[in-house]
Length: 67
Image 1 (tube, one colour):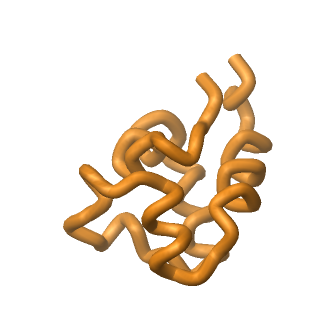
Image 2: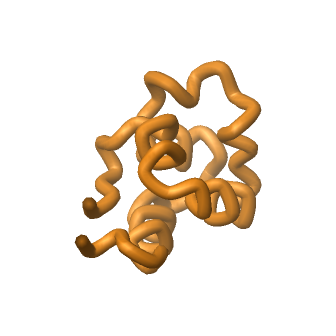
Image 3: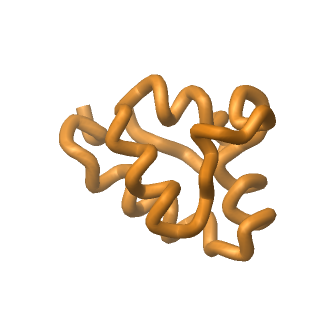
């Protein structure tokens, strides 16, 4: 499964727990955020003043993201 900017943060974390490290490296404490279930990766990144394309690219570098 590939990550997309429209995917919810919760879905990304469910897909690969290592996504937490990617989010946290950008100052996104998404695992603790109540909005993570419905907020998209793009919305979360913008809220934290991070380029969503960079976050998605890093998520897709995780093991198994291209399957």
